[in-house]
Image (cartoon, rainbow, N blue to C red):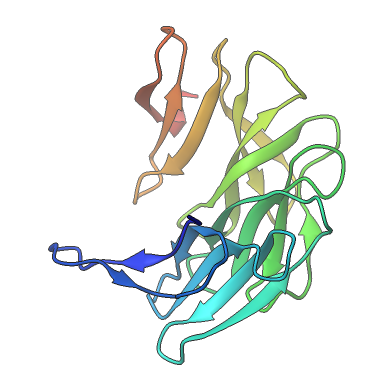
Length: 193
């Protein structure tokens, strides 16, 4: 069957289906206020990015990039006004930013080193993501300053580094890495570089 969206109380209990359909829907990200979710769906054929108002049970496609596009990892800004996500609409996977209604879409990353798995910084002014050249045997974790466009490398270990996320106070970044030959979760203080 196809992947579907379910919700469950943090304290446990039965899972509740959020949508019922025959489409593949996945990579769900709740908005900071918990009133909406962003998710990927092939409801209209190719994979697209949707936002759903949970109270109204209304889902709306906000970003479509073409028939063969693969999206990934939507992430809300702390104020719930913007989303960042990855897409291979252009050369390789790139990081994009858009308003939560789909307007003002812009690519953040350059073509030479694409990106995936973006997450907003708690301040809403930075985005952390994986940076990896096509089929490279290592990846970096970088932070993009949304105001200046400057990029800062946070992790550059000689391995594949993935799934970055900030600690709540943004003093550390947690990520997975295969530097030992196995995938392990690491934490690194951002000040330590």
